[in-house]
Image (cartoon, rainbow, N blue to C red):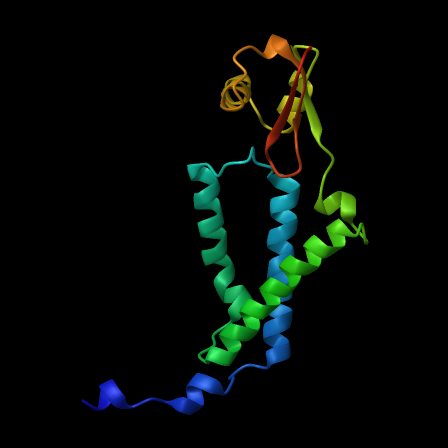
Length: 164
């Protein structure tokens, strides 16, 4: 019965790690994951099973490096606030073109020009012809030769402009 009602208030609210250490751990881990995802991944607007699996495994692998071993609610909140801070800061810097606007929000990549597939650009973005055709069908385009331009946008979505 003691286990049901006995609360260790001290362990719940008093940090066992320095809040600065939690901030630094969260910051370093966030930036490592951000840089890896930004440099090596740019999806096509939807999460595939492998993307979801990758994100889940990265979050599990990063947990100990990011959080160390902590027990208090305050430490968990500090880590969450650190991650939210960097997420907002990167969006803000990208929007205001501060420091790395081009890096945070890359230029669109041309995939189709005047009805011709640009295989070199598709290869660079790891988009094969079947995947591009499926994305075009989602935009109600059944024939890529009718496309004036098709871009892979920074968001991972495609934009399509049809020929007149």
